[in-house]
Every structure is written in C-alpha cells, then in structure tokens.
Amino acid sequence: MKPHLLCLFLLFCFAKPISAQNPIPTDSLLNGEKLIADLDSLKKTILETHVSPFTYCSEEAFNQAFEEARSNVGKGMLYYDYLALVGKTLQVLRDSHTSLFYPALAQVHKENGGLFVNMQLFSVEGRSVYVKEDRTGILPRGVQLLRINEVNIDSLYQRNADFSLYEGDSENSFYAFNDALFPPMIGVWTNL
Image 1: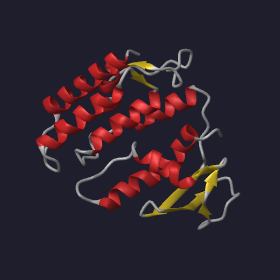
Image 2: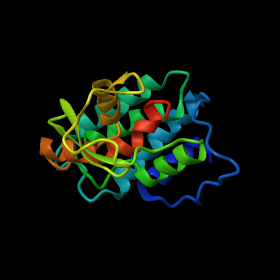
Image 3: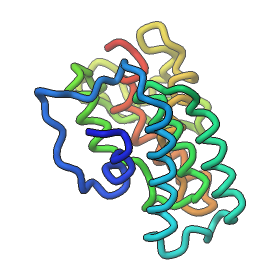
Image 4: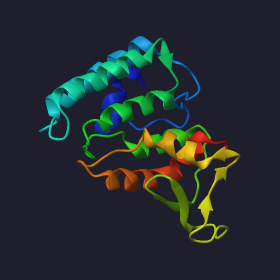
C-alpha cells in the first residue's frame, strides 16, 4: 500500500485488506516526501468531507497541528511513529469520528508477528493503570501494573496516548478511549 493512500485507509477503511503475505514493514523508514503528501491529502479530505471540523478547535489550531506534523516528518519516519504523529494531529479536532482506524493497526501488528495482551485495563486519569479483567486468569482484578517486560507502564501509557482520541471537551472520554486502546497496543511498544 502506498503511504499517500494511508489517510483514506485510516479515516474511512476504503482500502483493500492488507495481504498477510506482504505485511507493511513497520521497522522500515517511510519516505518523508510521501508522508508529507499523505498529511496534505488527509487535511484536504477532512476539510472536504467533515461536516463541521471546527466545532471544538479553531481553524488556526487545525492548520497549526498539520503544519507541526509536516515539520516533524523530516526525511522519514517509522510506521508506528508516523501513525502516532497522525493520531496526535487528529486529536486537535476532539472528534471521535475522525481518528486512526484501529482494526487496521491491529491487523498490521498481527501480520508482523505481534502479540496482544488478553486483558482489560483501566486508569485513574492516566496516572495509574490497573487490571480490570485478565482473561488468562493470571492477574487478579485491581492489581496495579508497574512494568511490562521491564518497560515502565507510565511511558507505555503515554506513548499509547498519541493513538487515542477525544470526544469534545471531555478529558474523561480521552482516558476511556486510551484505556480501551491500551491492551491491544502494548505489544507494539514492548516485546511480547
């Protein structure tokens, strides 16, 4: 899949399913010029299709977020770093209907041999992360997680926050989305 088509894939899932025989190389540097073109295409698509993109953010903040993203691309980025950049850029809209397409993230992770944590977690305003349900039965409900494979849970949670989203001005929605997204993404940030 060409990087400049990535925005359509992320926003609307119109792209063809990713072939398991040809997974997206998540550890290869993606071309910076193509990523900038992808960002420009994403911005244009939002402006042309979103009913009201400036409900929770100003047009100036929207444009600034995309300019900042363009300047951060440099000569290129790794796959998940770029998606984190796009996720963070889309957060300025504070609109849960304009976000990364999470099932595609999971599919790419799986096709690249990634594993998933089979549990539900919850946080207290993103500061402490606890087990809500461990489907493997190893960890009891309410146990606070401090590390996963020697990686501090706080740094993992913050890294995951770039992929999360807001709904309006609600900080609670951000934590709820991040809590739900965190278990499937842990494997991306650690070696499971």
